[in-house]
Length: 310
Ligand SMILES: [Zn+2]
Image 1: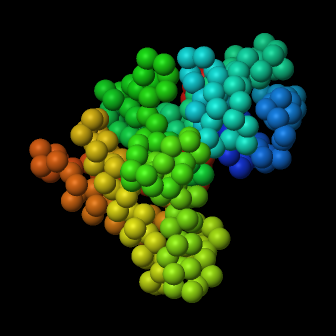
Image 2: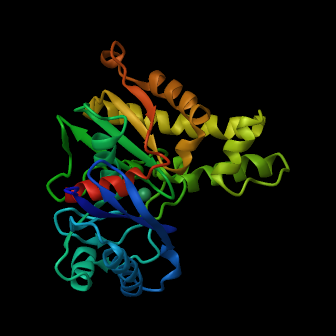
């Protein structure tokens, strides 16, 4: 006897695309990944991805069928199923992702949303945001995304594009961003942005720069003062912008997700300090909790993408 519901969750990232079979209790099986940037065109990518998805379908011999495919991707639009020029994918073109996947996976219900919104859904259904009605998930990966839940509902905006917190200008005329403008938050506080900061600080001190954000975290854990300074500078920028975002949505929690969130207190302590310094006085009585995703290593984005289907 088996009445479980199943869906395939897909998390498309700038570097890797991960996918798995998910049941409605949040159990993940058959997890696999492919390199997003190894495909020259979106058409090649979709074809490669669908071959893998088809093999998951072919190997599925449970009695309950797979209900559909949920996909989280950078800059993807829930309403249209389209990615239109993501700054964080190898291809900057117009990609009608939902229709392309549906054309190859005939008969499968296919839903697409922004990767950060998928993470917020995953957090609400399976993670630390269970029972919360007002919170924000901020994803600190190759870029920065956010999924904002207000009064229990994900905010999509009239065009499906709400929540591009990573492209709030943190420093006017600052670092060039993939979006074509300058000084966006993600050029400072993403896993990519922090490496630029590391490079500046370390070259100024005649040191060989760290090559990954994980190296910075590992060094901070060993008490390396350069690594601490890199996190302090990053937290200062991030905390200030989060204080601005707070004035708009007043969440009960801000949940950190993605590669850079692995740094935990090394990033969160300076971020929270800058946040509180910048926070408007009316919010000081009931500050939001700063939390790290409980699904960090369980793939909230895959779970959230699957939750779109359920
Ligand atoms: Zn930008």
